[in-house]
Image (cartoon, rainbow, N blue to C red; front, side):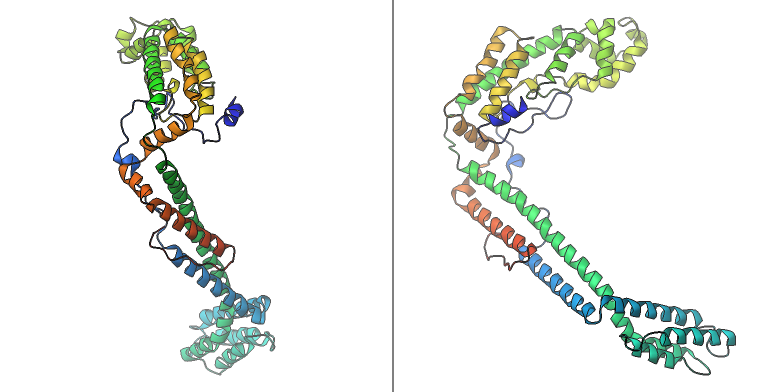
Length: 430
């Protein structure tokens, strides 16, 4: 049935989910009051972005330029050659740090000899035609004396500086790659924020162009009449029917796609199916939950089992209401309402008087209203837009902001694709 409803939704987006019994959300009554200022306030243009799009483009260009320079610096000698330089410098530094105390002054002669031999192996074992060989040679000359001091070790470290700079090219390339990734991530986050803002602005402009003088009561009144009637009928059913019968109805309704009940917990339903207490109405069961063990013993056969099976689901039972059986306001697309109406007719016939079922049937006339799309759009505008937003649309401000946001998004997307891009100047911050 869900796929048929999608095809019958007249190309409109399906209405938002209404809260099910067993959840905190509830559907909006067709007779609901005007939306609060908080619900219709203009959203923050870019809540997830701290910098202007132009700054992000500059940062991305700078990161890519840095990466190109780093790649060129590595390519000058080759990554393999630079890795050899890095390994040689690392080993030279290790020897300098390890032997500085023991091989200097009048210290350990064996350490002095061992240090000079190992350091010479590093320097002399490095090919003369490799980049950095001169630096290693000068460092070796700095520590090739009969007696070494701390200053000799410092001169060796200074002599290694050119080789360190060569080895650092690999690290710079890695850092530059990370900088590009970070810049691209920032741009993508900005695009995501712009996507959300553009969707909001498109919705605002679309609703702002609705006919606010349209006679929405032609839809509102029959929907409100049905909603009021089904609420009263379900209240009576909940108060008079056994918990066993009521939960069987809820379980059946929960399997329909347009009536959003949560199915009863299996352990609760199984208990009520078999226990004599299941013949009691739900309001009585909720009263029993608060009774002491001694008082409860007068009302149920097995107080312990009742408490263990019913009390954990108290909130679920308390929240069972008619809201999943109502029609939201503003109403859903006509195709959705037609399918919803079929389910409502079938379900209300199981517990409600014929007058309520007749009001459910009359929803077909609502969905078939020749001006349904226009009236629904006007109802959405009434519910969602504040007076200030209506004025923004009328003055062309929302459309201008939408154009600016789209231009910024296009520039950012082009930049990510490697195309020349610039954020157009605009007085509208998007």
